[in-house]
Length: 200
Length: 340
Image 1 (cartoon, rainbow over the protein chains, first blue to last red):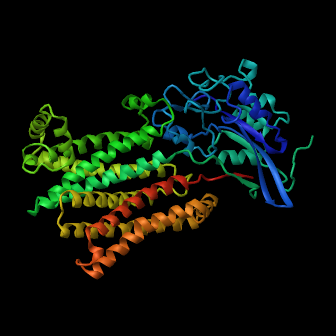
Image 2: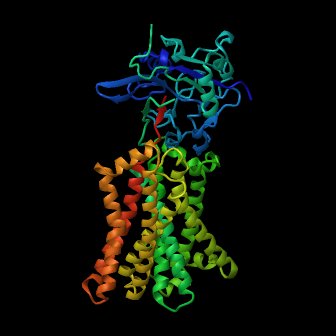
Image 3: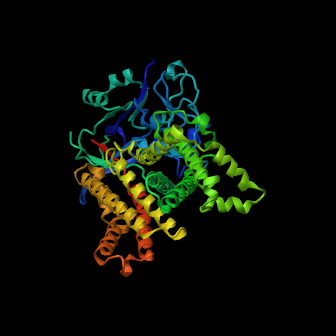
């Protein structure tokens, strides 16, 4: 099995500008109104006037035990051994939406043709762009930087081999990553009383 | 670290066609079980009513699984013909959808054979009741004689007949359980689709609705003996009580669950969710039991014991079984993402 790739997200650096989701749609030609492979949501807590809001950018987590892969009746969803990226073969998907129920992160989207598509960590472009693509390469080896990473103004999103992402992360984030079956390392917001945690 | 807030993901991945499919799958399996029970008793007691119940049981079981299979295909949002490639494409044996498709196909073949053997051939010519026979007779071209001969040639006897009977019952139970497992396979993420309670709930609901459908139709079509209607009605009541207990347990588990369970309870106790729950419990559980209790108390001569009221009771059971599936599809919620 090759080095597993994943995302790293630091909520303290996210300003909620949606550059990640917009650039994702642009690179993959997705429907600007509906087909959101990457979403930015302001998660709020508290009640007025004591309300805090935290922007969170999220996409397919490329889970290590991908539940979408387990429920797909036609093996259209595949967790690739070579790089851990979860891809979909749109030529065999029947649009049963079972993966939508199985995904804890709401990653699968269904376009006008009714076929599932989702983040493929930019190993290809467009829906189904990840299927049967060669193993993911790092940018210095010719691999394309994921659009969300490329366009994140605060450096909140990183992508790469998990071992490299761990080196940037805090011990707490790595510990949480080890406990949860997702290929994403998330930094917790360090001050949950701050409504707008980013400091330029 | 304390959670910052909850991020509620997408819901409503399935439409009403899935609810209809789950309902028809359940009632098809239930009708098959009723037909099998009637066949078992019919072999031991010389009473014509059992044969009529069996015949209508196979027929209704076949009809509902055919329509149910169509609704299953209708909910797919991909290219329609792609689903017909399932013998080649459905190869993921960790998916209940793939396993269930093969259960549906195998069950459909068995129930079709059982319907033909019960409705055509020498045994059926003596008593040519049953919708399939009437339909084939309308087609003409000597098709009835052809199917009659085919039924007589293929009808199993001896140990093979027993094997077909047992296999059919096993497939009917598997069909109903699979419709529950289709949902409960993601029960770890959707609290309403409880992995332990959904299978018995669906078996009880499907069997109960199957009894109601088969007995109501047979009573009207073959002037079924009142004693038989009463006996199957009591069996239905017992199954309804079991269904009520399992449903109550399922709702109780929601009150002790996490954030998604609590929000599901909110949905079930307000707005359309409350209407569905009250409608399902009233129509499917309370009213049929109340009618049965009144019939027992007032005796067989009372107006409440009339065929019309009994049919209305069975109709309520069927409506309740459908509402249960609608409820389970449209009030289900996924666990939120906890943002820390």
